[in-house]
Every structure is written in C-alpha cells, then in structure tokens.
Amino acid sequence: MRLFLATASLAVALLGAYQLGSWQGAKAVQHERSLEALDRLADEKRQLQAIQSGVSADLDALALQLGRMRAHMMRLDALGERLVKMGKLDAGEFDFSADPALGGIEEGAVESVASTDLVRELEQLNRGLKDREHKLELLEELLVQRELNEQVTLSGKPVKQGWISSGFGRRTDPFTGKKKYHRGIDFAGKAGSEVLAVAAGVVIASERQSGYGNVVEIRHADGYITHYAHNRENLVKVGDWVEKGETIAILGSTGRSSGPHVHFEVRRNGKIVNPSRFVKKG
Image (cartoon, rainbow, N blue to C red; front, side, top):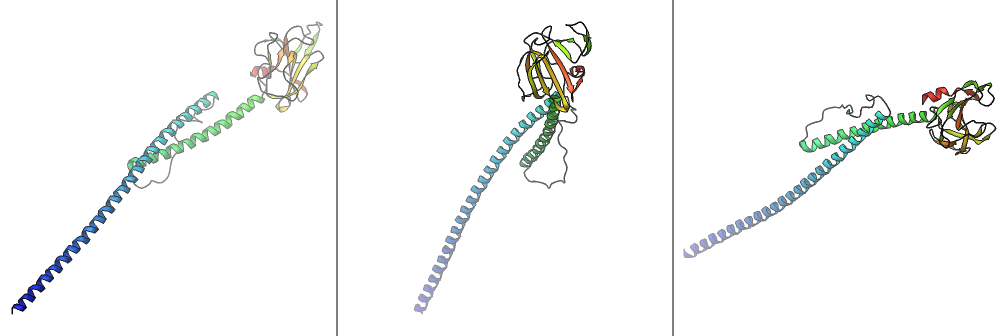
C-alpha cells in the first residue's frame, strides 16, 4: 500500500513538473513572438516616419517650385503687356491677365487637402504658362512681321535734321534760271550731318556721278530704288545690306550743287516716283 502511494505521488509530481515546463515553454515562445512583433512595429514606424518626412520635403519643394512659377508668370505677363502697348495692339486680343479656359470631368475626393491644393495650383500654373507662351509666340510673330514690313517700307526723311529746300516737279533751275523738271526732293542741312536710308535694302551703287557728285543707290522690295546725291562722303559700298535709318553717307555739296543738301530720288521699276508720299509716312 505504501509503495502504491509513493508511486502515485511521484507520478503526480512528474505530471505537475511536465505541465509547469510546458507552460513556461509556451510563455517563452509567446514572449519571443511578442518581441518580434514589437520589432516589426518599430521598423514599420521608422519606415512611416521616413515616408512622412519625404512627403513633407516633397511638399516643401513643390511649394518652392510654385513660388518660382508664380514669379515667372508675373514676369511673362509684364513683358506681354509691355509688348502689346509698344506694338499698339488690341489689348483684348492679347489679354495676359486672363486665365486660360478650363474644362473636364470632376475628379474624385482626395484624402490630403494640402497636397491636393498644391498639385491643383501647380497644374493651373502650368496651364497658365503654356497659355502665356502661346500668346507670346503669336505676339512675337506679329511684331516680327510688322517690324519686317516697317523695315522694307519706304518712309521718312533721309536726314535727321533738315528741311525741304526744293520740291518735286517743275522748278526754276538755281544755275540757269530756266524752268526745269526736278526729279526728286532736296533736303538742306548742316554739312557733315548724317544721310540715312529710308528703308532696308542692298546698296547697288556707291560712286561719283556727273552732276550728282557722290551718290548712293539702294535697291528695296517691290522694285523700289532710292537715290541719295551730293554727299561729301559715301559710307557704304556695293553689296552692303543696310537697315532702315542706317547712316549711309555724310551730307555735303559735291557735284552740281549750290550748298550742302541731299538730293533724294525714288524710282520704281525704272520710273521716277514722287518721294513726297514716302516722306509724309515718316
């Protein structure tokens, strides 16, 4: 009987020890898993913080870019308005203060209001910049064409300062006193002053001619040729391209001349044309 009781007690003790060991082992495994979970959680938090930091930096960079774009568009608007005013164009046709027309379907809701506002403003500014770029391209094309037309169109006087001393047509010859046909207009001025081209073109003559003294002739568009005579000195040579208003000679009194002046003639397709209408345009 005593042997049975001793055996039973030993069995109970062994069972208890086994259960205690199993419980402690399970506890250790659970504790290890908890530590692993905490490590993963800490790692996820670090990654989330890195993402948030990156997003914050991206938003700061985006805000900085928006500021630069706003400043750039303000400069484009100011430039466009100044060009419209200088070119005396229709301000309504080139309105740089107006936003471009918009349209499209409504987008779904977005979680981050701040970032969405920045992105939306960035897109709006991008559209605005493209609109300004298009308007400036059209404006440039129009102004270049106008400038080209003005350059090749005969207009103005061949002197900066001077007066008409003899008009076009029949007049009394200052040397013979007889009536004679005057083929151009004489502009009297100060000897040594500048003689100017009244339109852009190519120099086809820079020489001394009988009666005219030192002469410059320029070929222009539409068959026009201008003739500048009695110069003290010619400053251009044959083949030179000259711009409108460029100095081509020094005013003088060479040839058959009674005083310092430039004799100005215009021919079209070989025929003499009254220069008065071109002088009045200037």
